[in-house]
Length: 213
Image (cartoon, rainbow, N blue to C red; front, side, top):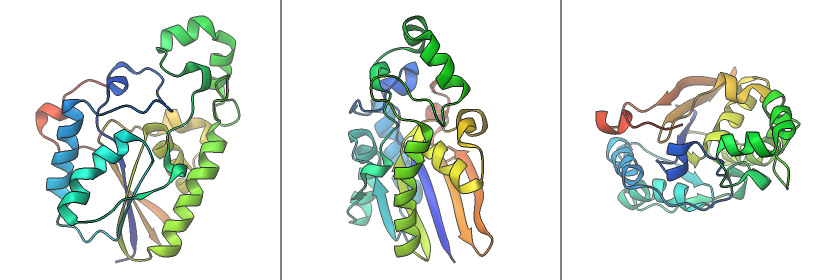
């Protein structure tokens, strides 16, 4: 069968609706976000999961929880899967950031691989370095069958770019990753192969139609 990694973005949060900057904020899921997690568990509990990895955040733990409960499995928590830190921009709306940090914002939008939000924010390269160490662990320890990785919008897009040879500075321009979406990468003799991107077909129509980023 070979290794398949399912990258699941956490379910809906207030900030995935608003589009505000949310990296280190430890948010809970909304009620629709909890429904996404429950529907994912119902749709995928039949699979022979080797392992479930999550970031340390409440929103990823809550997304993985229904599947873990159904399977009797414990998630393996890895700090490398946490969301990008947005520094001084945390909790702020995009328009507020543009008005208060315009030069920093322009640099970040132009080349996020090497430019970070001020106040301790991370670059895409820094996120890739920590996240890819988790991917190396998965490849070393889970050589066959499906593995679930529950992480965040920016982190998943950066991992996919790194695996697929896409410029890290273009992660926002090349990869979409809505709340609750699944992307699947198969690892074989030719390297990582993208099999599915941003899929939310397991959800009810009502959840798929919810607005958000």
